[in-house]
Amino acid sequence: MMKNIILCLALFTSILFSTPMNVQASQFSDIPNGHWARESVDFMVKKGVLSGYSNGAFRPNEAIDRAELTFMFHKLFNKLRPNLNPSIPEMKIQKFEDVPKNHWAYQPLMEMYDADSFGVVDWHWDKVYIYPEKKVTRWEAMYFFQTFFSQKMYQMPADQVFQILARIDDITVQSIDSPNRSPYPGSKAIPDDEFTISYSHLDTGEITFANGDIDALKAYALAWLVGNNIMSTWGNELEIHDPLTRAEAVVMLHRTYNVLLADGSLSTYTK
Image (cartoon, rainbow, N blue to C red; front, top):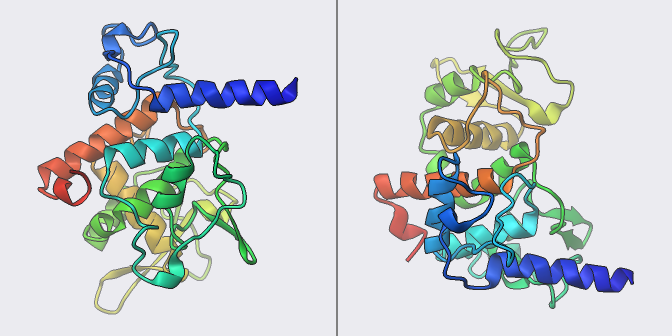
């Protein structure tokens, strides 16, 4: 019985993300006129990224999982295949322990992530995991976007990064120059270090981020996403612990597409 349920769920998911259907967002029963994500859902349908469920629904408020989000990246940005041509051959991932070859998203998952996908792939000695059915939080979404657009993100000036981060209340921006390492004024202290970004002022007056490049990764990724309005804040908070919904994922991808189109770099990422 349980095996049949799992097979049905897998088939249902594959229908959402892989079966072509001649449908527009206006025909989705749960994407009515005036829905905040309708334009982006329509865009993704036209691009062949998604089609909706066979019952005519899109389920915009459901949390998206890692396989579904990966499939969207894979379809929309069809030049992004980091694991097919890793910059360092040793970075190529040969196998995910939790992604069998008959998994509905096997190809996207195996092509999109190499060993440099920090925050996305998980190493346990010589075994690698991706947790394809795990729901993505808004914080974790940052790592997925960083995996693919880090070169764009690091083009942002450090002082601009700092200004954007200082306005986000649910992360901690902390100076390592202070003996007490007190949070930057206006930031809300969070006990989990994952949500803390440490920085230092160099003698030249420049800002550098700490912790072996990990804080820089988080800093530039968040600042790029928020600064380009790809990820929205509410009352100065990112609501980082909340799940990323299907609608939010679609809107973020659509906005990313438009940012790349506007700066002239879209052809690097998609045909």
